[in-house]
Length: 344
Image (cartoon, rainbow, N blue to C red):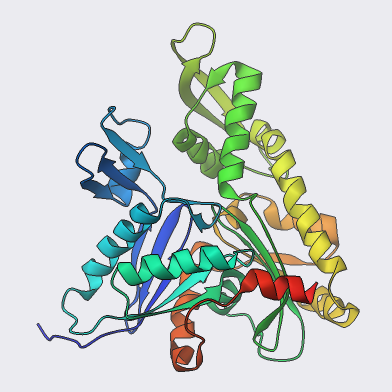
């Protein structure tokens, strides 16, 4: 087997999943963002899908958790360990450490940027470059953003929803909120708790969201039987959750997203808004796949809206496309929060 010096890498460092793009090969890793370790010895037991299966099922001496929250690093050591494990899988035959492009939410602070850079360096990167998630998503979705015309993208990930107006290969206006896929799961858990007096776990809520979830009425009502714990008796209980239940549960998080979309449009120059009304809004991220999300946004804004092909992969694919310009990219922090304050 031939030994390669080094290949550049793009990473979609998401709250719920990590996707790694290897230059020349495409997406080579798509794993949940999760780590399981022994609290006594500090030894890492599992990373990725195996660690996610352990969440909510571990004994007292083992902790299985996500090292990122709302798009930012909440546990530095676990994040560095997770990235190191993933990078070792694809760079074990490389003689030189890789250059890495990492996507970050548009609302990230400089402190959070530095944490991402340091964790990636510690994981084995030679140099680290950051790219805003909505810009990466637009590249991955194949949007035409090089001209002077305006385009709009909404990336609904696990921890954050990033909304951006793009023009001339850059972000003109952007908004990042903490309401996204995880907030959808939390809303489903709360709804089931209040209506049926049954407590279900986050993984069950995610399964419900993916199977019967909707934010706009479906042609036919779907149902799914789930198991949880009765809050009164403490015993297991089965309940049937319908798509109508989920639609009611997601009312509040969807309202937050719609408000952020309209707020972004209000801050955008009229000429760019006119362009967007012609080209439409593109949806990416796992949250974009919830039934009726495009219709809901269209009805709120009056602007045509469509879900991108391979919506979940768009940010990772965009990171991969950005590798061709890596020699012109700025290394280190890009001071997103400071730039946003200056623009406002």
